[in-house]
Image 1: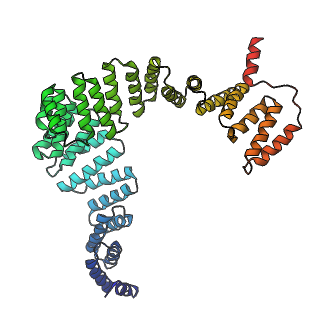
Image 2: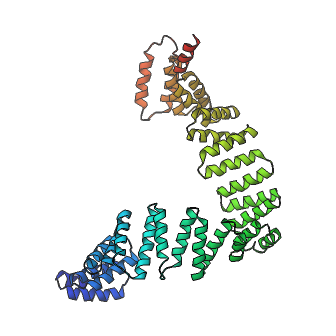
Image 3: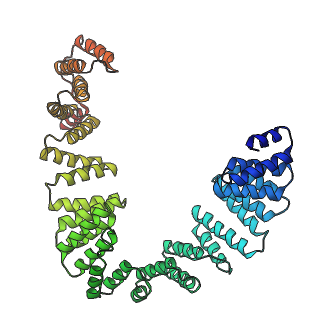
Length: 465
């Protein structure tokens, strides 16, 4: 017998025989979801609802996004078990990302059960949904209600502590994990509690509780037990040679004992393993502050805030750094780009000008300055910058076309004609070739009386009258 036999029975509407054949195939291929789905379907047709529920549940164990299974299970339990009906409807709404509807379903499910395990599972699910929808207070409330039952799990305590920590309620988070320790005392709970003790400045409690070498070293450093911290750092170096946190602790140790160059050495080792971390720039900034190197101090605080997305603060720190080293082209470039991004284009242009003076061949600076002058209507100065770009790359068709256009704007016919011709020589086959050719022909038959002024020139003349 085979799948074909089962399908033949099914086609002949001999559903009981088809069902039995599919069951035999299911025993041979329990992971074949198509067979399991056929069994669920036939069980429903034969009114074997308990068996159908079992098959649909098997499918969901392997594919939790199967909406058909949830719908079928809802049909099965609609009149017999309202708790399961609402649970499966809530699951369906969750899979469909209809979280508010799912929340309502799980709340209704609670009204149809008095089983403690069901209550714990449902409230835990509700708490997660409230957290996903940004309702932290209700999430906390559901987790607290879950703790009232005996049949709960350490994950409930852990997640509740995370929420309290997120809300900066460290004492409440610590209280929850202390309760968890009495019941579970797992590594996860213990180390999470130790970290919270450390964060809450309960240093001795953290040091005595943790079994994690690196966290214990951190506690020793915070307690200023430097000799013991150094000893443990040396003892465990072979274990953590590829662990960034080890090198950050090494850096912290040397920072505390005022060996700042050694501290910087370990910061660089940390950076090799955890590149561009905010902690790298924070550690550097603190070290340079104590070295009285104000340039590097402000530079690294700027990078720290930039990585964290605080662009306005970063700009201020970079401006402070610039006061100590006004020849740093990289810093000028960073400031120019950041000032543009924060909307201060006029200030940004000042730095593009500084870059252009420091590096006359800097194409990006010249492009930015040309664009800025174009926006002001100062076409003569725009042409000057474009000419400098042209000298750097005489085959750049974009620059050549812009030069032709800007000379046409200021009615410098000879230069406009020359650059249009150069463009046509280099841009054969381009999309705008014919358009530029027509423009050139028209221009050659146009007489300009005099060179026109740009908008800025006109404004200056008006105010100088």
